Each structure stands twice: as structure tokens, then as C-alpha cells.
Image (cartoon, rainbow, N blue to C red; front, side, top):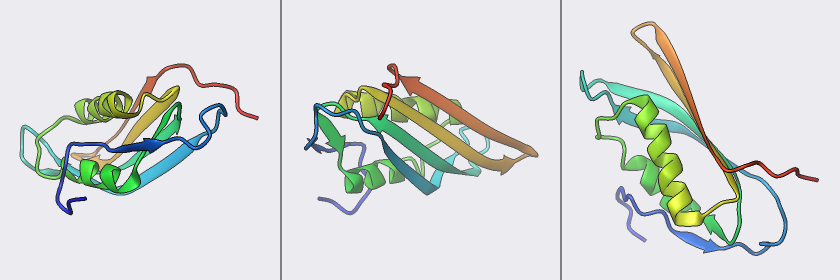
Length: 122
């Protein structure tokens, strides 16, 4: 697997595809660039999902998130693109992506996007 940014999310088979269970991943060092000012934006990205047939492989997720580092994108767009790419790659039963962006210009932004209906667990 490459050690440079990549927009490809790799998946592996879910060893328990008949069970509803939730996976939570947190990436506290996410960086992108404001498309208007070229200033860096910093965020914590939180991903929670209930897998179906596939799991997202973690190193590919790290490289995927890293690929935004030098790209100009609005916060709302970043979160929704992460959600769309994750759904396209893994097809989860339910997925939530939260971008908790650091204060810039005196404003803190949190963006939440959801796919599917969250199953009752346990």
C-alpha cells in the first residue's frame, strides 16, 4: 500500500456481516485549505458506521483523509464528500461523518452528514 495521499478507500470483508455493530473512528489531525483564502483549516473528523458486507481498511482511510491536506474545500463539502466516498466504497447500513472544525475568524464550525437509518444495537 502506498505511503502517500490517496483518494481510494480500500475495503475488507466484514467477518460478522449478519450482526449489527458500530465502529467509531476519530481522526484528530485532519487538515484542508480554505478555497477562498488558502488558509489551513484544522478539524477532528469522527466517523461512525454500522457495516454491511465490508469494512473500510484503516490505513487507506488515513491516506484518504491525508489527501485533503492541500485541497481547497469548504467544510460542508469536505464532510459530505467523505460520506459519499465512504458509502461508495463500503456500502454501510448506516454512516455518520462529523467534521469538528477549529475556530477560524472567530467562528467554530461542526458539520454532520448521515447516510441510512441507524439500526437498534443490542
